[in-house]
Length: 199
Image (cartoon, rainbow, N blue to C red; front, side, top):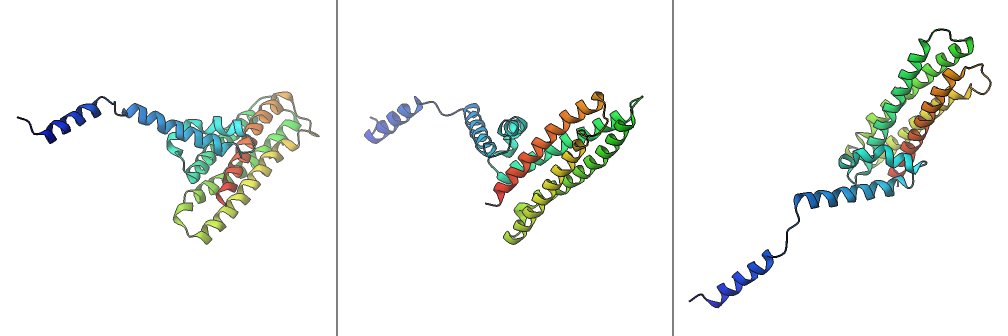
């Protein structure tokens, strides 16, 4: 005869087994939702929320809910966009039949964009060490990051400032304007996300 306690234990186990345990896929889906919600909330405070979310959504599994990783990803995306703009300017400079205005603008843009690349590279390097420093060091690093990002924005917009008064062809002005607009929005968003680290 089976003891009563054993019978009750078996009945409890049988009862519990009727409830499905969360599968690995379900757990992963819940985590993905959590990461996307975090990103949407963070991007809501960015200068261009939609651009922020769209550009960073592919990296949610790496960012998770980490503010520093979020800023690092934003800087990485921005740096790649600035490098793409630099490549665009280089290709345009090799075109045949450029006017004097085109040549002058492309030369200035090449210099300004390279400055922006250098500033973003320096910024990304400092962001990567934020978690390892002291509170005072972190405050100084964030101040430097803000300065470099602001300088990058200035460099980027300086490239297109000359369009208003310069004799620039549509074949040069159009592509650069579009590329700089994208870069400017990404950089502004990166700066907004970095600003949140200070609080």
